[in-house]
Amino acid sequence: MFPIQPDLNYMTFPKTVAMKHAEAAYDFYAKIFGTMQSLERIGQRGGFGVVEFSCLLQGLNPGRVHGADAAPIVAAALKILNDVL
Image (cartoon, rainbow, N blue to C red; front, side, top):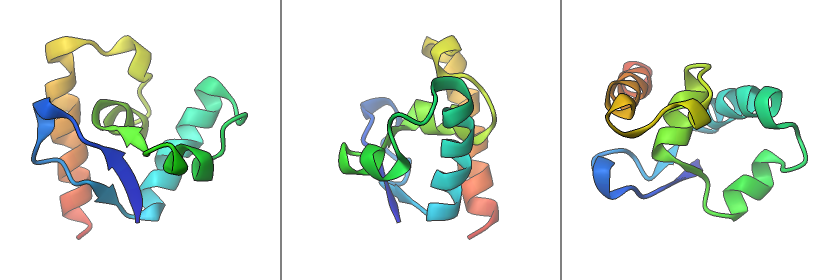
């Protein structure tokens, strides 16, 4: 399991996700930000944030999502996670 940083705006989001989802998010992360920070190191630092993970999982740049725009992206990520459980 891979850690997800708690977010007061999304308290129902899981605190951990399956490694396959973290790896998928990291694949897109690496395309945007490079590989200077490994997935392992991100995990050691507390994992992805909720919005960051939700965006990356769906192939979206988290730097371009702000405020209320994040809610439907987080909801879609939850659906992705729940559909495979």
